[in-house]
Image 1 (cartoon, rainbow, N blue to C red):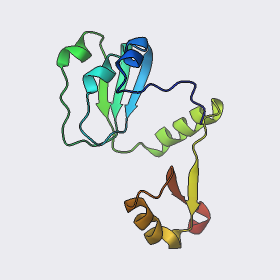
Image 2: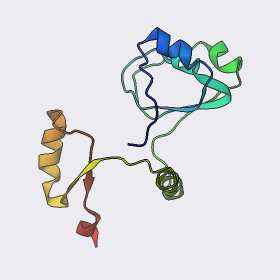
Image 3: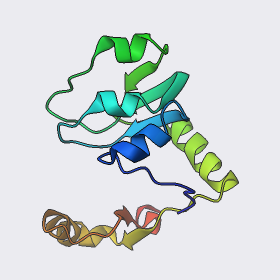
Image 4: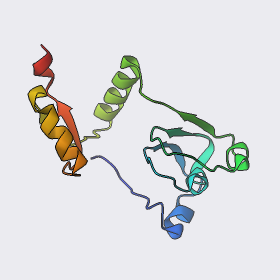
Length: 130
């Protein structure tokens, strides 16, 4: 998919290796997890964006303050934001596998999603909306 490294957030040795090395973390986790350990990976003035929706986050304020980390969340980006990400991915040859489905198969896709029978993401064929 274009990644050059993966950091397993439950491996303390990997976390140490990447301490203050990342510019940005986009947190997609929707379960309670240790955000402070992830904040330690962000360089000074870096950013941490939450797009997952866990029921709560326990964050030590000093984890943000000490390195002036920008901490924010987003429900969904604008069309302009989406285009920026698409352009960035194209420039850096980041590819995301999807399973394209016809709009008429949305109920089947939902049932499969509920059974965890989706390997990446579903995308509805845009031709269905022409």
